[in-house]
Amino acid sequence: MPLVNGTAIFDAARAGHYCVGAFNTNNLEWTRAILAAAQEKNVPVLIQTSMGAAKYMGGYELCKGLIEAEVKSMAITVPVIIHLDHGNYEAAKEAIAAGYNSVMFDGHDLPFDENLEKTKEIVKLAHSKGISVEAEVGSIGGEEDGVIGEGELASVDEAKQLAATGIDYLAAGIGNIHGKYPDNWKGLNFKRLGEIADAVKLPLVLHGGSGIPREQVEKAISMGISKLNINTECQMAFAKATREYIEAGKDLEGKGYDPRKLLAPGTKAIEDTVKETIGWMGTHQVELVPQDIK
Image 1 (spheres, rainbow, N blue to C red):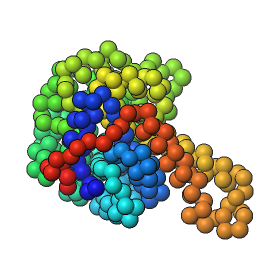
Image 2: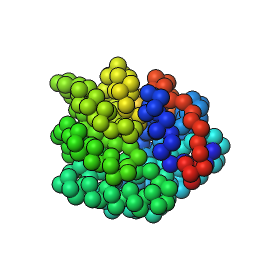
Image 3: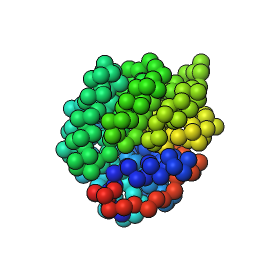
């Protein structure tokens, strides 16, 4: 299956009241683990890079090339979307130029009028190349690549205005945060989600999916969330498995220090985490039309 943009896949998810997983990659192992999990579950998957991860890995062209090469070498047959996560204006343009299938322009920290105008520009540029666009309204709590959000609830009116720019999916702040959820977290604001879902018929995106109780995520999916972002959960699983390997002294046994052996438990933990998450999102295959294929 060629790489695809996200439009048909997420439209089908919104219509069918299920969700597609969006998993951040940070390196080769992360990429292989996500792809292997999606292939085993036989479902489409979105692999995304943040601006920081792309910089760490060597740039957007390298990230795109790595994912593309792994899709080929692993004989992946499920649809794969390469996506920019929380990109600013310049990053979105760079990812489009590099050939990503989908980009998020995150202008939530700009004055709304500026967010609106720049979103329109990104939509025009991306759609001319068959690339899908995600935008954000309100703010996601926590920190992502140095951008700190207080968890501001999205405005329904602003959500409608952003949707009218022609974007393909919309991320809205509904009390969700990046990173670990604190003990005093109040939970998702389903009232606001319902208001936005009634006003905007686009696929909706839930950022900060790691750590939200499963029953809340499932309710959100039933109300219109079609894309679920997962990153912290995979990072924690990787760290736990790697720590256990070292604390057990396995890196000191024979050639246990070989990075291929050292990173294997963490990579398996990522794959298991992705498979478990996919297992309860209800994701399934969709029929793609030619314009959705890159």
